[in-house]
Image (cartoon, rainbow, N blue to C red; front, side, top):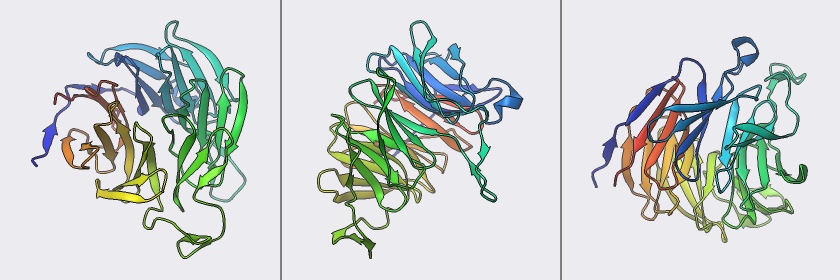
Length: 336
């Protein structure tokens, strides 16, 4: 099969700030991008959320309030609320009609980095990734120190905490919200039941020779960078630090397939709403579109010359947006 090469239809160049996170609104009309200048205390307010028109790339508005890199974004189901997570330690909910902040969860640190007292080590504040539960008011937030907290945005209270993994954590809920998946540098991935917070995979016990209490663990999947469920929730897709995309059966934890997808890390995985295809982004500056059933590559999106930071896909699957470390934002049209 001949692999198509797709060129961007819109290219934006930012004067300052890198877009570290991207998300499309449920109606596909708005693209939100979390901008970042880590040392914003010295460089000015560049840790903003930019809102673009997905069809024209025109900047519509900027949301200000975070003190550090805006690391994660999510819309609720009807698009009335935009949720943002930041390395300042806060989660903010924004009303997309009034374009005003309506709630902040947790308290932000005044400094984007802080020294934790250990030699030659800097300790980052909290939010590295967020995931919105299907009930639309629980928000899971992962921290770079390996903790995951489930917050109730209505009650403004903590529901539970998840622990026992070690990674820069990508997290995802399954379709009905009964499971939360998280990357793990030692066991490939963790599954937790929700809202109890109990780890259901890998099983508890003593790790020895690739087995925990007699249960085989997958081999050569020890360092995952990103993880996501298929839209039906039956299959789990993980992107590794070694360029692999690995597929597991959720119920049995059996590895179903692996694909050599990129050179270096697989940084992001996104499914189309129908589940027919998914998109991957890697350290090789390439974005690829895959058939979700056959795992065959359909096309490559070419144009980035620096490290890809984030990707987003509109719900209709017709527009892909990506950002890179060179302060570029590209809009791609998928026409087949």
